[in-house]
Image (cartoon, rainbow, N blue to C red; front, side):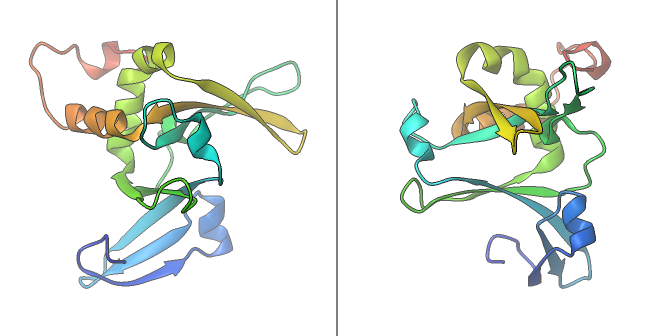
Length: 167
């Protein structure tokens, strides 16, 4: 609650909200609701961090396409996700800092930086109870924030969004 100016309450999501990728709902003084998706890294994640700062898991595929599955784009690329903010948290032994980032800016930064980041950082698959596999790209938080700042500015030399990667 202390991270959201004007918040008068924060509550856990309902089952229905949780199915939509919302973990918390913050209510502002004026009545607006802020939908928050929490992405928590498990204890020990820092042993994989190669850049001496937290790395966040940005999901490329929620379900990796294979012979049994059609494939589902990851939450980070989803244009149907209704979340307003993403709260990245870590086990206290790894980092005592958390990050609250705007989802749409994060999505756009990931789309625009995907090819560059994929060539620089670790990609890993995770099996979900043996049913299907998801795939994430692990990016240092400072570069994610830089990417968000970049998409927040207009550069007249930049190609229109529909001409960029993942358009």
